[in-house]
Image 1 (spheres, rainbow, N blue to C red):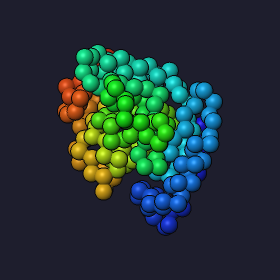
Image 2: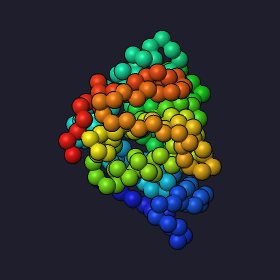
Image 3: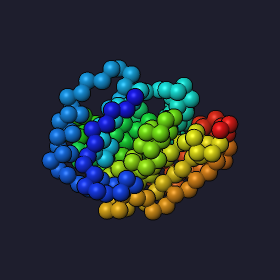
Length: 216
């Protein structure tokens, strides 16, 4: 279930990133703060849309995200960074709830806007496991891709059951002014993809995380 409060299009193409509107951004932020979602839901602000979605459905979505978090924790053990789930990342008046994110183990000084989330500038990697449904797919493949790039988050990992037989994408080199990533590596499920930079450098997203290739 997704609830939208759309930003005026100003005649922009549907594929284009929305134009900045500070007044609307602040209004959406206040509306987002006032929402008290049920325990099993998350609410985000993504490119001028307030979106509500159910956590952990389908089962494979939650399973993949938990596998990634557990293996990242092992990969990062003893270092200054840790993986987190069920935590908001805040950039300006946007608020995102990645399936998995990396942030400092010690979060002192990294909280944003009254501890509503973590500053986007403190997050070196976010990961999304794509959920079924056209809005869910568009959110992770398109809108969040732009939003995370605009926020300057260095690495964006997408695990997508619905791209062919399953595809892992690792995006790096954010270009904030253009809301895009300069580099992308894509591989089908069953082929490991390594994170090329940052605290998780060398971490491989393979079949032990994604499971076997999917049957379309």
